[in-house]
Image (cartoon, rainbow, N blue to C red; front, side, top):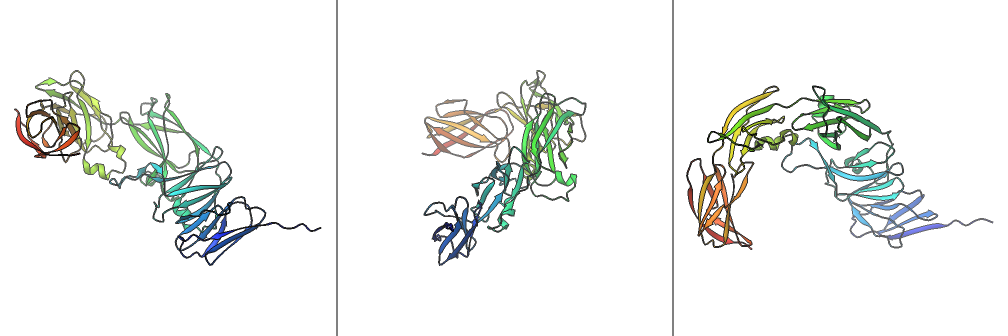
Amino acid sequence: MIAGILFAVVSGVVPASLPSPARIAWVGGTDVVACQVADRRWSCETEGVLSQGLVVIAGENRIAYAQPQSADPLFAIASWGRLVVAPDAVRVTAWKPDRSSWRSHVKKLTPAKDDQTTIVPIAAGQFWIVGADATSDNDAFVVLESDTFARTRISVSRLRSGDVATPEYVTPVVATTLFGRVQSTAGNDIADTDVELFEPLVEDARRSADELTNTELVRVAITRTAEDGSFQFDRLGLGPYVLTVTDESRGRTAVPVLAPSAPITVLLRPPPRLTGRVLRRQLPVVNARVHLVPEPGTLITAADPRDLATRDVSTDMNGRFAFPLPPVSKGELQISAADSAIARVPVPSVNGDGDLDIGDIALPDPRQIAVRLFDGDGCVVSATGPTGRLGVATVTEKSAVDIVHWLEIPEPGQWMLSASCGTRPAAVEPELLTVSDGAGPLTVDAHVTSRRD
């Protein structure tokens, strides 16, 4: 007796939104499938049951794909798609570098979820990676992770350039653990500080160690050191990587790791410090905040914004402070007293290590401003400034008597006036108030010109 052969056939209509359907492919699964497309209809046939896989129809710069297990499969339209085949029990996620729209020179990038890339599980270790937009980020990537082999990254541009019918096979790499310790140049362990691990955004085996630290990098992981200064990163591949350690008061550095095999010791050199004393009317100012305001152009063009970051300090009982400088310190020190009085001093250039004493800094009293606000019954006046500078502040009136609203402006410059009338904001004329150095109150006549809903 000859057993009959059972054929399974699925078919349907090509989606109207797919222009010029040219060919069809069965993607994924283990079934041997023959498919065809003609006259805007498609069909697939196989021996047995169509249990897993996708029907993919390629058209003019677009594709349509569906899981045809149902009688009337619903197709999705996309720009591109590719099957990734990896070992079982793998996790796949889609990412892109998080780029700033106004800091285009940043080279140390953090990953962000990529909502332009969709991951469709098909079978164990098989994933259909599909992109909604042909103009999506060329530096986007997918990450494959498991508990048994090294983390693997595949660029979206590589997947997008391949044919929909040709899978991308991932060969597992034995995972490596990077062990390390952070110490000061004096040999002391540095606990509880940030350690970040980066890898090149674009692979290039020809890069030297110095070139590696200056290329575009994307963060793989972040951790903090233990009490003995130790840290570790698990499930790493062959490398290379760049290790960065950032401690705003104890030092920072970037170390190339060409292969994460041997343990590594990272030495931090203490940063140079600016020391000085804050006085008001020849008396020490206690608990004044000392803060670095970066120069705007330097902030915009910085390759790593953290190179401009440092921790704030406060003055002691004698009005003195010791302020740690970041690697890039162009800008000014902003000194703020508890009553909001502010002084600014340019940051001098510092060569080498150690401390530089910048002497005494005189902190002026806030300037008293009397705003006579007409047509402003029930309004509260505020000022924001100084405009055109970083490190702005908003101050609200200290008191009001009839139409006179008293403000204490902490530093000279142009300040933008505004008002809040009940629960609604209001526009004030004049909008800008120029405050100069000087003593004594300044009187300004103003009007409420409109009350916004």
